[in-house]
Length: 179
Image (tube, rainbow, N blue to C red; front, side, top):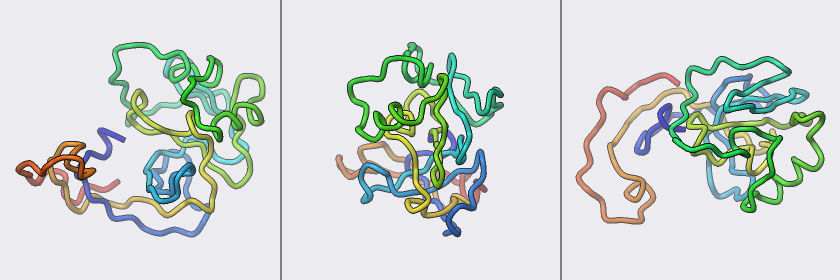
């Protein structure tokens, strides 16, 4: 989700009734592959929507989306990531992602089934999202992020506890930033 959310951001999440997020909303949910992990992504497709990506441009129901929040940082092409679902899937695709491709692709577009969302990360070139593991169900939804209440500059390793903490600096300019 970089640059929308940075490593070290602490986010206030409003728990919402199931089914209330709309297209382009950020949502917080249990990772469908491992419910012990919490993810945040952007809703691109609601039930009944048809989604595809062509040359890094997302199309919903045949219309190209204007996404000022989406960033593309990779300097190399990836046929599956950049042309979804048309290209050959990678070998690392999750079983749920394969099921999505087998049962929900019609005329080169993914059709979002009832009671689910299709989500993408804003850092489109480096995002583990619905392209790889399928849909987010309404039951996995936790809520919608409201604001960044704290932000500490730190590396990925420090954030995940895989390295010794380094000196941390507060990013004052990110405090109380609405999402």
